[in-house]
Every structure is written in C-alpha cells, then in structure tokens.
Amino acid sequence: MHATSDVSAQPKTVQLRPVPMLIFGSRWLQVPLYIGLIIAQGIYVVLFIKELWHLFAHAFEFSEQQIMLAVLGLIDVVMISNLLVMVIVGGYETFVSRLNLRGHPDEPEWLSHVNASVLKIKLAMAIIGISSIHLLRTFIEAGGLTSARTVYTETGVMWQTIIHCVFIMSAIGIALVDKLSNASIEDARQSAAH
Image (cartoon, rainbow, N blue to C red; front, side, top):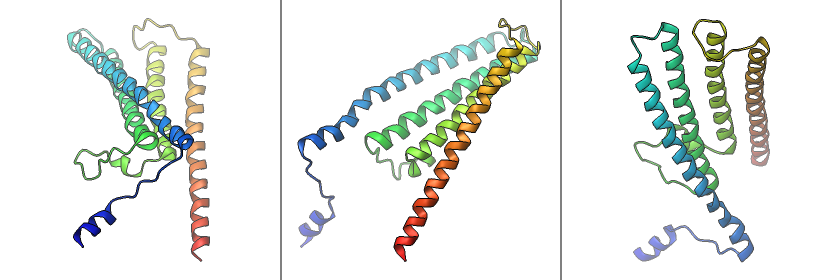
C-alpha cells in the first residue's frame, strides 16, 4: 500500500511522437546562448573592477562632476549586469527548463511569478534605467560641466532624448497590452466559472 502511494505521487511522463519531441527538445539549443551571456557578465565584472580602480586611483584629481560621471558608469555596468541576470535566469526558467529553486534562500523574489510578459516588462524597465543613465551622462557632458572628450551637438542630444522617450512609450505600451490581455483572460475565467 505504501509503494502504491509513492508511485501515484510521482508525476506522469508523457511520451511524445518523434517530431513533437524534436521540436520541444530544440529549446535546449538556447543553453549555449545563456552560457555566452554568463561569459559576457564575467566581462562586465572585469570592466566594473577596472572602472572602480580608475576612480579610486584618480579620486583626488577628479572634479565632483568627473566623480559623478565615473559613478554613473559604475551604476550603468551594474544595471546591465542586472539585465543580464534577468535574461539568463528568467529566460532559462521560461523557455528552457525549470530551475527548481522553490524554497532556496537565494531564490530571486521575481522568479516565482516570471513568465514571458513579466520578463518583457522587467527588461523594458531595465532598458529605460540604462538609457536614463546614458542620457544623464550626455546632459552633464554636453552642458560643459566636465572636460569631456566627446563633443555633443544639439541634434545628437535631441535624438538621444527622443530615443529615450520612445523606450518609455514602448514600455508603457508593453505594460498596457499585458494589462489588457490579463484582464481579458481573467474575464474569460470568470465567465467560465459562472
């Protein structure tokens, strides 16, 4: 009797025909892509350490604006690294296989409710954050507050601002479409329940 309850507690595996098995198995082709992103994140760690060392070595020579630009550069690297983590962990969990982190003390809070639409919104917000840092850096350098090596034209600054606004509008659009689709799914569930 005890053996029967153990057998019934195990999930049933479904045998797929060869073509569906090939199609479903093709998701594992994404694993090298995620490994490549992990390597890219390692490169960002090296870049962060290099930038931090540069800031530390020149801390007494830099003006306040130069220090602010260096710190913005560090924040930029961290935000890109966070974006990589979201893509690697969330993408693998959503499109390849479960990570089975439930109950792990370091499980990311957002991973429990991640799906393709949540991942899109999180990515859009991260891109807006990165774009904001770049735009702030451009405003500081274009305003002549530092001895920047890059020369900014009014047109260049204007286009960077327009592109940033397009990122914001795109994120709002993605969130709105997600909210509308979730509302229609919820309405369908409530209709089916009655």
